[in-house]
Image (tube, rainbow, N blue to C red; front, top):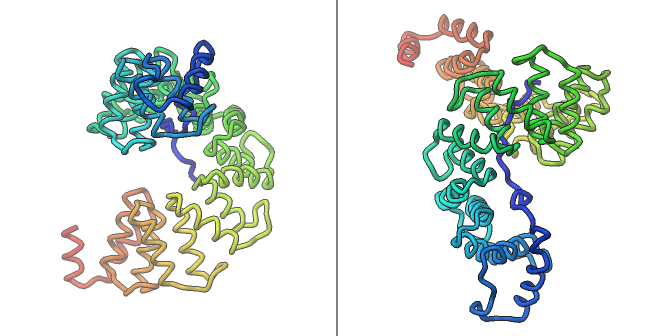
Length: 396
């Protein structure tokens, strides 16, 4: 199973908003008591720090009912007074549409205000916006600039993302040594995503000597923190005896941990374990259940496996039309195996009307992704085509 590439860190959870500091906890408690009894905003406290802390309390439901609208209200009061943490948090509310109407442009505005005050977390967030084109035109150079500024201040997420920028040459020259330097810094701080990424470098021997034992070590550190990608990779280590003795049941245990966190890869791997009787009794119906979940979570290979199930009647009634549809769902998203199988369906008229031109086109797309058999198949189809079909091929 081809592993997923190393990942950028894009924070999604409330944990990134921070918590109230101990120095102001007493003040916030007093404010909360006032909020419970006072109805007029004019008499509520107006200091930036107090407003920020009150926003944090409303966000988490700490001493008050959880209320994102109120959290946004108090973060806004603090942000307008120049409070950098409030500005950053308000940016995240706009980014996620929590308590406010979702608006990436406003998210960028507030991230930028906080970033320009030197807040490293906001600088990393602003880098994310440029990297993904959220509220601004996608600009890898600008993303790498902000990641570097935050990384130099020790922000572990920015360090990871800067490392990924160097890994793929996004906005900076492609340099494995620089990628390793920054990802290692982040991993040593306990960042689970970076630990998983560092495991990928050791497993693949990228920029250093291949070392499955070190790879397993980093995957385990991240997996034990609950990182679903690392849980998948650790399971694959147990499957293939990479750095640990082969243990198919242990592999399944880790796949299941990831699958229960809605990891599409974990769900796919768990489905494959049931299909192939690796660590669990063979159960095609159970396999298909996990493939469907994986497909919903965006895993295109899961569509291919479902197509195979429908084509062969594994755990479902044999249905070549449904099989072709599954292959199509994977193929249109760029999955080479889906393109290959869809090409075969068109070549043989399985589940679709026989169409050599369509078959050729899907084989050609699979071949462009390195599928050598698809390239051979595409060339062989040309010997069966009519002159009109050959002219159409020439126009592609």
